[in-house]
Length: 179
Image (cartoon, rainbow, N blue to C red; front, side, top):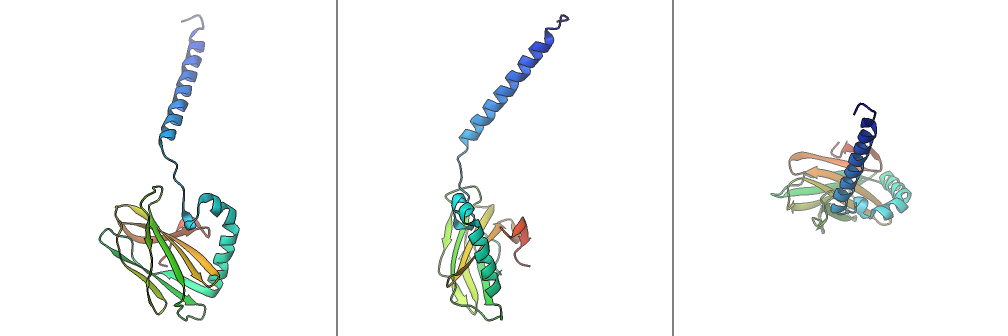
């Protein structure tokens, strides 16, 4: 190997290794199913097409109302998810429509839809909400009052008592929802 043939052999071996590593990466990626992201209760394509409208609607909603998550973290034993909705004068709003979906991030088939909250003086309460699997959960909420609407996306974990809001206006996707 002193005649200079070791360089071409090394280059061919390295190239072969890189091609095999790329093929293995592609093969493993193809084994993983594609999961749709359902943030803001819309498909990625719908969310991409309507992002500006959703942001503007949220800003307009926030000018008229104050929405606060006052509930607990999700739990397998059962927890209470609750929201407080008041107008800018502090008066309770009792005629809002709440759509709430609990879903696992990245995994499909674990969606839990909540309906008919108990309404008490601007507090919208979903009692005894149980999740069927440990780990992280997204609490996706759409609140509508007439033509005004706002989304509130929350992250919760069965092993963490904190609940965190994320979304378009939360650049780090970890702002505290209970603050």
